Image: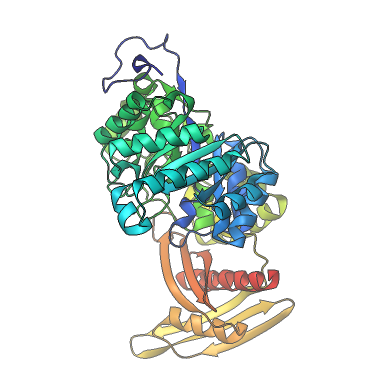
Length: 526
């Protein structure tokens, strides 16, 4: 690619209608790097659901996992490769034979398969992690790429910690990897240390100095330790990168990765500058964000760019006045472009199933008849408690009803709590299992929530340790619906649970039962 094909740090002021846009490949690693976020692990059904949505929204390459890491990871990658269509399915491997063989076995049934091999190259990794010389690194990289290339034609090579690797050695490794069969070379900022200018210089250097660079696509994979992942990824594109590696909501190791929704909308909104585009259907960004929130339990902050609740909200009187006169005064994107609705339809107790289903679909959820019925029943209960039902209430209800597809073994029938400054907390709890109801009264614990934990444990006969307990408001106001997210540990394994109600004690009990039902389902599957 000629230097004239990319921006050189200057905004384009001339008419860009005659400029042909470059296509940038989107490499999504939500299911691999994103799932490495603490507490973000997904089960097989959830991974398949996320992978299917990624393919439908136009992701070019889906890195489905690290097959050698565990039997579960291998099976997830294998099933995604067998069932998901429309995207290249990629498996990660270190530069050793067992990893590469496992990766191929997992992805070989995909119509478009890729093996992604990596090996650290920076001086600090060579000395302290690998204890290998530069020549040994070079030899291992070549052998790894060649073995992967013996299985398929689409091979990606990543020199791990490339942004702290010496220029000369990085050029040697990249050139050798391409000669060995790499069709994509990824330059990862593994620890999020680089700045946009440094990224630009490094990519431009590779394009200028590596003689066979035109035989491979340059890719960028940036971490967000300094909050620069998106800026660095876009800087790499400006310097000639043809692929961006990113995740939904920017989840990933430590501070996360570049957020897919942000890099996509930056290039779309500022096409006059970057002169680049993707094949992503941007109207699916908000549904994708919500799906990943649901499956991982990691929620985005309200002011998150593109997909946050406040991304298209205006409270200031000055802003509201400007918006009423001309929307572009304070919005550089239309909310409809990313999957938000431009209006907030208020639902109440007189609304029917059709209105609820339509609103849920507008918010990014397509419900089955059974799911709609469950959501509608809870909706009616909530509508009797609240004067108005807002979008946040609907989202919380839908996510609670469809999360995880776990069978409801234990359900809540009734509860009664008593607590006070000078009284021991007590809970009378009635649960249902099958057609049988079980009741227990408990007078112990530090408060009504703790007492509820004891009561649930006594009835179901399953002991667990609460490792994380989070309560958040789904909407505003004193009658806001509350969502409880739990992480419990049972027999050395972690399980998530979620519950929603206007009553924090009830939502806590529902979250505990959701976690217990997951424990039972997981044991049954074993």
